[in-house]
Image (cartoon, rainbow, N blue to C red; front, side):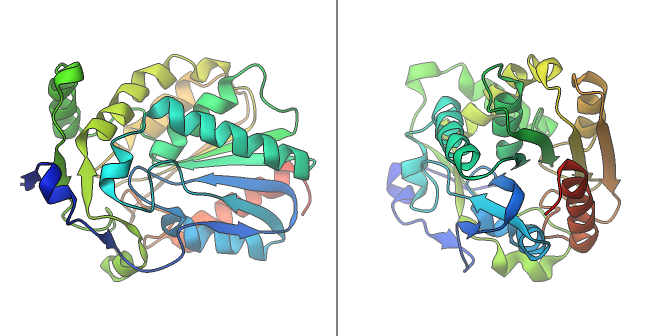
Length: 272
């Protein structure tokens, strides 16, 4: 289904889409610390974060290490690198704002759940929002990455061409999704291996949590949302499955409703 290339092919790769890859906006607490998905940028969260900013809340959505440059750069980083970078960003946000909320999409959901589970998280954390959470991947991808992960240090420098900029039902938004045109497989394995690691700690998450997922998600099964709701440690959990959306729900057909859910949740976490 996908073309596979080695390191030489990766050097010819480009970014798909056109737009801003990081988003920052001053505003009131709680500030939203947004974390994008694997190979992507904050552009996939743009419709949502624009609404959040418009509602008066601060926004901080920086690029993860290895993103926004070339897929080859991404091969050099792993889950701990992404968590550590976001932890550093979280501490800066906690210094600038009295309260904040973590919002993670796909890979970003794993990062934010990891941070929300940690005992030494900043006291200003008031909530967690997870979109299209990646606690498990769809079966074919999961099986392929599981097999490749057994190669360990012998894993070659391989890339898988992406069929589109993102998994959406509304194809009109594809040009606004700024992402790599291929998946670096060593880095993708890091995302796969992070799933069980984060599943083991979600019981330690106690802050209010909003879980949103698209019914037509072909990257991360929508059942992930139900599993998380059943296993998270928080007593304040809301779940919604969007019936007309796929993986990139912040940009898909129901993006306006996604934004309304998020802004309502932020309102419960503290006034703008």
